[in-house]
Image (cartoon, rainbow, N blue to C red):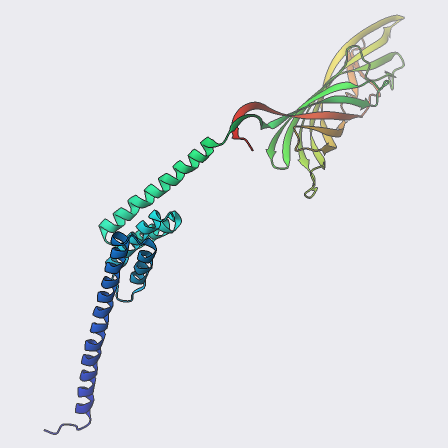
Length: 343
């Protein structure tokens, strides 16, 4: 049998190389572990025997960085090092080491991980207790604080066009914010007692009948929105739309037959679309100012059924009603007393 003279030396060299590397690497690992154990013993002597905590911390750091130190040795060094930091008053460093032990919990021994968790909870509890003691030592004062809701109340004078006189009425409204720049507003505009809202108007097609219009009240429901105004909060433009219910009293005089006059009054309620635009001054304050102009289309009936005539009479009543208001807006909420540290 002929053996190749080339393959046999190569195989022998490969086997010798493997054996050499195995024998050479294992003593390095063993030497690194033994060296780390020796440094750990020096650290324990510095900590417990000589009471030199700073030196002990340096030795424990060498154990942690040693290449041959196993997980158990590293975890033990971190635990002892954290204890040194606690006695030195460096609780943040100790807390970090305890957290590192818990982060490597699968590799760290169970008893060391448990002790690290107990110590970490103790440090956190002591920190919270210290915070409470500091707060208790501060002088507390009673401060009255306003807690607002999403609703606001609006009160102010209002005037209407067209009308025979320029007297003002009291307008009342309530707003409720449903979005950052959108809110729902309901209001009422009552008439003063005995006030004529419109002048007497002759019949358009019947000279025997005349009527005058008295404004009673108007209720509104509108969806209002703030127009873009950038970051400034001093003057905010508003626009919106909704519906208005206008109640009016029609006083009439007619001559149905002969020279006998008949008179009476009729109460009418009319639904109409509503459009609104205005300005809100300093809306973020507890008390602000709202300037509004509103237009209600066809707020009054154009014809009225008169019993004496047994038919409907047409009148030239206004086909629109402008309302101008200047209201104070007051945030709705309550005031309560809270304790705060004195500054």
